[in-house]
Image 1 (cartoon, rainbow, N blue to C red):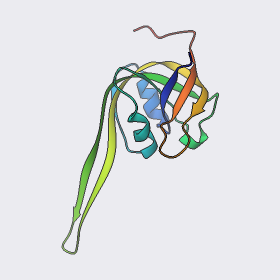
Image 2: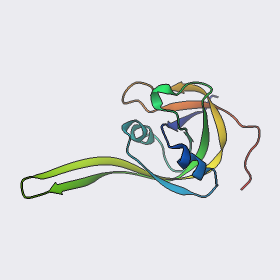
Image 3: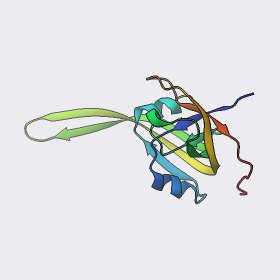
Length: 131
């Protein structure tokens, strides 16, 4: 059976380096494609995280696997006011708490159409992190 994992793309290399330290971290994601991908995940699953942009992600690209510990997707209201106008905006964002599990490589990529979650098949690591 082939396992497909949700893939979060375009994540800063410095964030990935911080996650590799092993401590659980909370991230706030605002990119639409990553929020769409997270709508089909639940805490307890493993997800693939890479610094490669969604449109460039291809087989052989490196990333990390993390455990999804918590997930919250919601709207935030932003209000801008001055004497001449009042503006209200809403912004959707996702907050996730994740913990590093190991490094890996994407074997296959799917979900490149707008509105589809990005999923990858990975090459399983022969060496696992103890912890």
